[in-house]
Image (cartoon, rainbow, N blue to C red; front, side, top):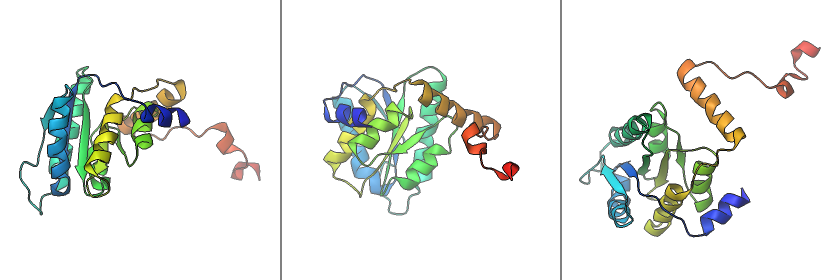
Length: 186
């Protein structure tokens, strides 16, 4: 964990890519800011809405579309990522994670943004527009977009278990250590 935190504290090298954004009314201001920030930093930003402030809008409408676009493009071999934004980021994360092939992480610090990519190969990040300053959230997105997946075997294995469950709905087998001391030993 210290490595991710140290990398997050350093400058981040951003590689141009397509970034899909979705939010609700509570995330609209940050989304608008990020559209400009992404363009200024060489990214192709795709806005899935909302496009006007509506205090009664529903985040799934926009966040599902952003996540679907990321999943579709990644299935086609593109390195697209996504950002979903709400008041806390919780509902938006849940919505994005309903899309097959999406691993959306809630970032509340530079370290959580870095670890989402490094350990979990998250392809969407969620941030809370009412939880942090615009500058802090922009930094979390910057760290997320700049952090590569480590590719460590243990992380690949764990992501594979999740992907298998997502498609088969079969639980991964329990490890030997979880079987010791079970009812079968009585």
